[in-house]
Length: 425
Ligand code: AMP
Image (cartoon, rainbow, N blue to C red):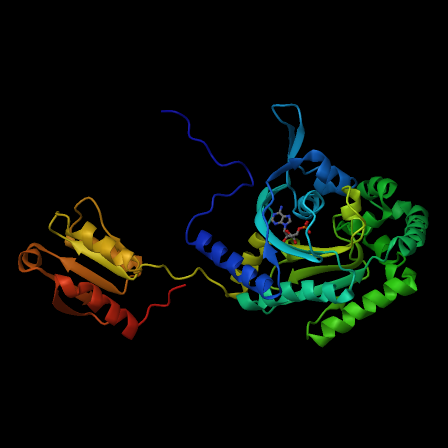
């Protein structure tokens, strides 16, 4: 016997009904984004490695976790570890006629991480970006789309953390103050954080290691370094969020793993999940990303949400289960002729979900399958009915049945489904 293969570590297979639930989740997101004027875009899974290197040089996501390889023609390419860099490459390559460019996308992203609950090597994100308007109201709009989406799933325990990273003029003195603080307290930092400090003192704030926490909690805070202009931007964002009724907490140590953010930064947490997996998404404003990729100086803001984690949060809150199946009718056939195939297809062509058994199963086995399918109605074709030109219509919910002429079956099924509709997605 040949050896069997297993899916790669951290790359789960997904099957129905989980896949149905994921599709419904993406639909809910498309609705929330579409209502706010965002259109779907799709970028390739693979990009020139440079796209990601250019925007995330000092980040673990890019330096340690990216799947990159040399293509057959010698080009260095990478599987996307996130969406924003790809979408900015798209923006620069095909400049939109009007701004802001308001787009969303979804699909798999890849990071070579240590797999655990809620952390995979292939995971799925929803991403939304608004590019080309600096107005703080755009920040509010973007956050509100995510908020509305979470609500539409039925999630109630999602918290929003908010920070401002300032602009370049306010960030330089902050970085200098951070470096002085961390240098003076090197002994209180872990080995890894000391290495991070050499590259980017800001990222030390992102450390989740217990050993670092005392030094981090006494570090200078960005909020004290904001220029008048960035402080005003941040104040407007907060006012806007209050105006639309979105609660948030200010979190001055929030920095997030990617380096390109300026101004507003935010993260959504699922309070129903344990802290190691409760980050369900986040994002922020960026001023330099488009320019870094060779485009004109253009502000933008966006977020990435983790579909896998959001579904864990839904499980924890007991909301947004798999949508009901589409099968309304089950055709039971004991004749072995072509009646079942004809009847099943007639129903499907009329827009009614219909299933049947194969391989000449017993009547009992077929009724069991009918129950499992979730169908509301069973249509029974036996040799007597075939001889009479009739079909038995059995209502599986009411457990009554009638015999109707073959030519009236469709109308009878439609009448019953209208009178007592299935909760179809
Ligand atoms: P990030 O770009 O790292 O901020 O990721 C945005 C969101 O994607 C996170 O908040 C998570 O919900 C999700 N996410 C990131 N990495 C993974 C992963 N390895 N497995 C599952 N979800 C992830």
